[in-house]
Amino acid sequence: MRVTCADRRARGPFPFRKDPPTVSRHLPSDRAVRLRARLGRARLYLCTDAREKQGDLPEFLDAVLANGVDIVQLRQKGLEARQEIEHLRVFRDACDRHGALLAVNDRADVAHAVQADVLHLGQDDLPVPAARAIVGQDVLIGRSTHSEEQAAGAVAEPGVDYFCCGPVWPTPTKPGRHAPGLPLLEYAAGGRPARPWFAIGGIDLGNLDQVLATGADRVVVVRALTEADDPGAAAAEFSRRLHRDA
Image (cartoon, rainbow, N blue to C red; front, side, top):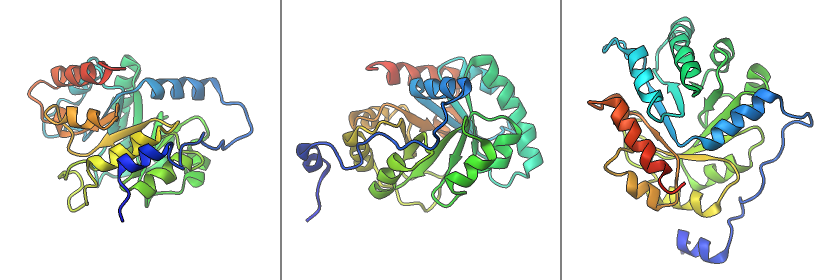
């Protein structure tokens, strides 16, 4: 018999509700403390390409970062490391202007080269200890999760600072990937993990309330901002609704 999210909540905290294990006996640096504090306040995380077709990357980044985006990640498959670093310098400058966190997807070497604040790893990417050996202890590390088992693992995995749950809905960003949907968000929210976590996958202003109703209060978005007629206004509305009950 399948155990529902309601059944789990009725039984009390999930088994994965525990303080994350520490990965170092050393006291965290000032930078690490600052980055983790900023992560704790973050609600809106954007993944975008370098907008080469539009040719408006600096303007786009200024618009969304000025209106509530807390973390921005360059996600564009097929880039050579040199190209990615060149684009990320624009991201780094924009994040510094607006006090946002810069995230790099997959590549620990690139994250180190551009002094990124965040390295995001998928389930099949570099192991966290190997990534830490490259980027150091200060940089935040995120983990993608697509099932209850993976979410529980990310809560307890040493060296992980946050995780993402999804996709909530099928998305062209990850074609062919099964969407575990809202039940995965209910599972994560029901466990009340100590680590921040974000809902991801097909989220827009039209379905945001469904996401928030699960108990999620942080989201990753892509097309909802990259394809918006007014990206700044869309970011501001996301931010307003995400902070409404904070």
